[in-house]
Length: 416
Image (cartoon, rainbow, N blue to C red; front, side):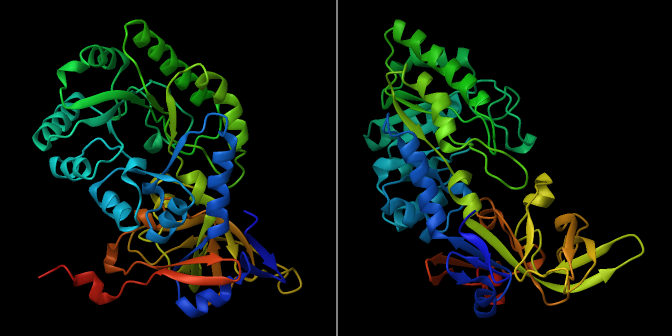
C-alpha cells in the first residue's frame, strides 16, 4: 500500500495529507488512491498479456461512478450483478460489449433491459434462468450470448460467506446438468450458449484452488469439444486475495504463472473478473474518536464510523488494520494500551477492530481503517438512520469529492 504512507508522522494518500481531507470533508470519510486502483488493474493486465483476456472489474466491490469510470477509461470492462449496477455502467458510458452480467436472481425486467442494450454476456446460474433469458430474447428478436456458470465443487480456504464454488453454495450448475444443457443447447433458439463461467469465491490467497477449478473446467471443455460443442469464451471469475493483516497473497504474476499453462490448453477466449484485488488496498475509512471509555475489563475507543459504514468486521469477523492518522512516538506517551475500536450503532456487534494496540489515544484523534476500498461503501447502509459518508478520490496532490455526504433530508427523500 505504497500510496498510503507517513510523512513527518502524518498519514498521506499519495501526496495529500489525510488530516486535511478530514478537516475539509468531515468524518466518517472514505479516501481512495486513483494511482493504486489503476496500477492494480494494469498489474493483472500485464500478468495475463500472453492471452489478452477481457478484464471486467467486479462492480459489487465498489460501484462508485468515478472509480468505475477511471477503470473504463483504461479499457476495463465491467462485471455486474444487478440492474442498478447496469444503470451505473451506462451512466459512465461503459461499452455494453464489455459488460458481463452475473447473479443468481436476475429479474425479467433486468434481463430485458440488459438484452435491449446488447450486453456482451449473461452468466446463467440455473436452468430456469436460462429459459427466462431465452423467452425474453425471443420476445425482443435478439440472439443473446450466454455463458453457463458451472460450480466446480472446489472448497477455497476463505470465509464461508464468500466461498461460492462448493457444491453446497447457491451459485452455478453442476457438471452433469451443464453437460446435458450444452448438448441440448439448440433448444434455446434465441441464445448463443457459447461460454462457461466459474467463480470459486473471494479473498483467496493461494493459487491451488484456482488451478484445480480451471483444470476441471478445461477437462469439461475438452469433453464437450469431442461431442462437437464449441466453447468460445471461458470466464474464470475473480477472487484474488489482498493484504489485510499478515496474509501473504499471491501476486498477479504468481497467479498468472500458475493458471496460464492450463488456460493455454483451452481454445476459448478468457474473461477475468477482479474486484477486491483492484480496489481493496486503494481505499481507507477515516473516523474520529468521540470518546475514550475505560472500564475495569476493557478500554474502548468510540468512533464516529460504525457497522453501517463498514460492515465487514461485524459480518465476517474481518480484520482491518487500524492506524492513527497522526502517529505518536514513545516520547509523547510511554504507555502502549489496548482498545476495542467500536462505533455508535446500538448493537454489541458494532466494532471496527478488537484488542488493538495504540500509543496515547485521545478524544478527537483520527484513525484510518486500512484496506477498506472493497466491500466498504458498497455494503454500507442507513441503519440507525445514519447518513452514509463522503467519498474522496486522490490523484497525486489533488483530491476531489466523488460522493457528497448524505443529509438527513436524503434519508427520507423517498418516503411519504
